[in-house]
Image (tube, rainbow, N blue to C red; front, side, top):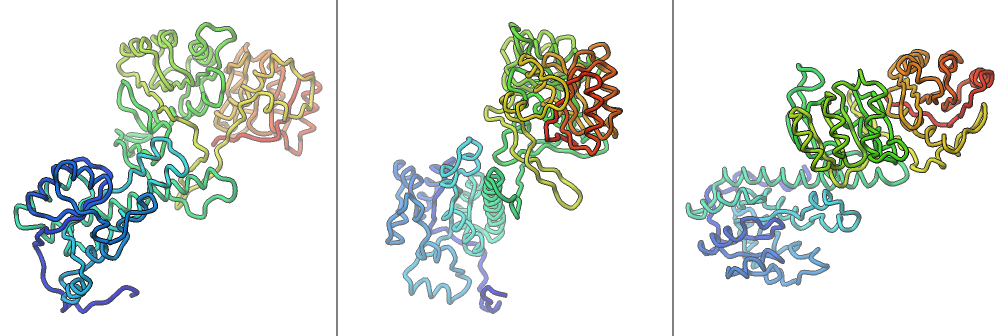
Amino acid sequence: MAGPQIDPSLYRARDVVPVRRALVSVSDKTGLLELGQALAAADVEIVSTGGSAALLRDAGIAVKDVSEVTGFPESLDGRVKTLHPSVHAGLLADLRLEDHESQLGELGILPFELVVVNLYPFVETVASGAQGDAVVEQIDIGGPAMVRASAKNYANVAIAVSPESYPAIVDALGQGGTTLAQRRELAARAFAHTAAYDRAVATWFAEETLDAEGDLPQHLTIKAERLATLRYGENSHQRAAIYSRVGGHGIAQATQLQGKEMSYNNYVDADAALRAAFDLVKPAVAIIKHANPCGIAIGAPQALDPIASAHLRAHECDPVSAFGGVIAANRTVTLKMAENLRDIFTEVIVAPDFEPEALEVFRLKKNLRVLQLPADWRQEPMDVRLVSGGLLLQDADRFPNEIESLVDSWQLVSGERPADSELENLSFAWKSCRAVKSNAIVLAKNSATVGIGMGQVNRVDSCRLAVERAGERAAGSVAASDAFFPFADGPQVLLDAGITTIIQPGGSVRDQEVIDAAQAAGVTMYFTGERHFFH
């Protein structure tokens, strides 16, 4: 063992420890005045720092500054104040050992029997949206050192890291001191407190690393706190819960304004709906069922209520599948959109905000779950997926917002370049295709889906499904495929249905065969040069 080894016979028994001297330094000052008054009434010497000392002193409670104990001024904007032997010797001296007691006497250092410390609000600062140095300054150094020292020395020191522990401390003052059992329990809470704090800091640094260029991190720490236990998981025999990640700003942080309890599947579908709706820049709505789109659309040109228009157009894509769906809007939900939903069975609707009148309409649908996104909602920069024995990490699949920068990078391999007025529809089809489970085919007209083929094990079946669902609307639409066509049979299904334009990544050894089929049909075809699988 690397640490010191002490003969067990040298330890003297010690249970109840009277509180004569307390070190107080807290960020959360809840209940501090009441505790300070109880300590003063019990003639406990209070040593304190900064705002804690000022608060107690303003209330007429005698306080000794830490600098009086250390003989060293608080410095470096408060970074150095308690990191001193005169403090830590008083925290770490094990007075069960005669030698430790003698050394304190020789050094002229008094022990502490009580330490009241909680840490800088790091988690709260991250949650506020702060960045960079503003977050770094909330990483407590002296606090955790005092907490860990006191908890290690629980045989002699009581450590309180939460106002919840104060009443028991006050009771102990009237009973002659803290007991060994009490101090051990407080030590357990203290170590859990610093462990959670360190995990939060480590998680923030890891996420900052993920946002940066270069290699993915060698070590990845993910910390999450349980928000709620769900009724069950994907199926009734599976347990489930929803967890919130430190610094999270997604569906887990949404506020439920009304409706039944959210289910596991509701969360999965709501997140997929957000992914689809927020890929689009203009007012857009996505309707999701089983993590796949039933319809995606942006508002019609010149629409008086763009978000209501977007919903109606998305619903028209596949009204049958939209029954019992989950809806995401990338703009405030209006009264008109709410009225359109009045007679459509919907499980969940999620949006950045809702008009008060819209919420009044939704209150008539008591089971409808209404979720409002957090103000700082944004799409995650990385995707994480658990696999047996580990996890997978990848950059999130994102598109540029500018239509021109997206379409101009494509290669025209067949037909004529469409009119500029059609480019938005091409961009829409390509972006929407990413939201569909592979193999994915999307048919679109006027920036609204009219047919979707998803999740098939071959691309031909996805083409057939998209065409079948579109029916007569397939003629004159554009088709987007999330990956290349390995043969010409898939495109032929689209061509036979009257598709005017095909957008696909290209890259197959049989690309020429596919190009020849498009040219023979007089159809425009673009190669995008990148695929968008979504498994």
